[in-house]
Image (cartoon, rainbow, N blue to C red; front, side):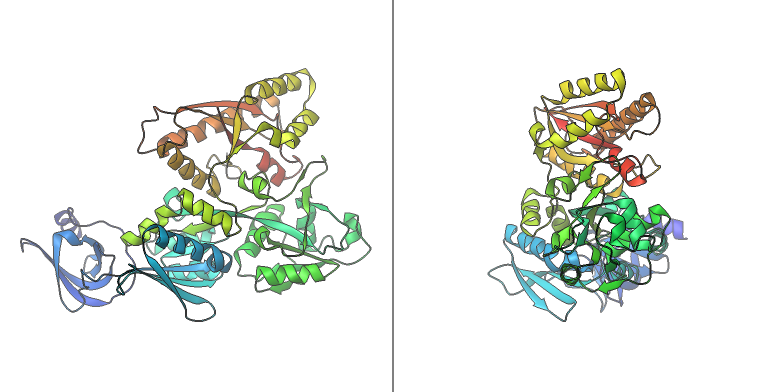
Length: 519
């Protein structure tokens, strides 16, 4: 019976969800009166009804039916509602700025009303009318609570400072929210970084990621081990539910097989964390790069002598190993048209400008001259091995000198052929730029690099395969263009230009990358 019903309604139904709770009985009748469907209205997005029926939850195209019953919404005065929950780092500044920019671009006024310390809403309406067309409701707390709200059907979008975890992925799929790590289920709004901070009076200026993990686990507990004073290390962290604290555990401690010690001073906000570390002469913390305040940021280093500091360019290119993407997770349910238009807006050039003005690193591809990359080429000269290494270095310089590097880079998940979460978002961002004609008449070269582990020939082969995989992903993502106006090709230089030391998994992960160079 269920299969028969699905076939009968094939022209009307889309098996996706919608938002908001209605919980009223309705009857949806086809316009010729031949077919009707009764059930409880779960949501209406201005175009589609979501109804709980005896056949399960179904989504019906409103243009093909008439709605009868006490739960039927008004079609003329429909207000698009969007509930957004999660990270306060994203929700306090970035998202409000994007909502206001979206309203301005679309000729709407946006009135913000605060409900309590963690909740506020924006009501969007035409300047000459009091009737709202949209209501964006925010709950700003933590990444953990954002995912909890999504699973409880109390949020449509999640603001997250870390990738979704395996357990959350499984639960989301079980309740019908789709595979949230798919390319269309998440996007990177902006970039931040996990920055190691100390007091300005602390003489230590750099730290390795390995030593950071050992400090956080308690294996190193005295500054003397880092070339500092003979004093204990006081560790400061964000609250355990925050995305940045969880990202530290996922990407620093877990990769080293270590666990965070219990003797940690927790702080409710990034600002409070930075202020506490700045005052604590023996303190160390991991903070959001966008909110380090008066504390001092340490460079990341290793035994090979390379050093990387978090700045706008190293974060944007992902050359800084602890880059922290700011995610927006989107479940497999149909959002109202205004909500979909807002999501599309977040990828536009005006939205990238707003992101920069809000103090975060934007996603817009940026061209970098060769002169701005002296440290990278110095590293390449330093590690060149024998005649073969020098020949590879010479070919790289000759090939890349006439080109400019784009800030968009691509990296793969550890031990996998799949692009990591930020790179999957980068695919969509670069594809959008190609579709918009940004690179018409130009030549994009996808250049593969590897770490220095193993034979150079094998590393070069793997680097070529990665470059080809990224090029294929871009070609597949470009939907509205035949790619006749832009030329795409690949090249590879293996281990010729390392960004970090190969002594740790973090360093090797940074070195395994695909860059985009443009002529």
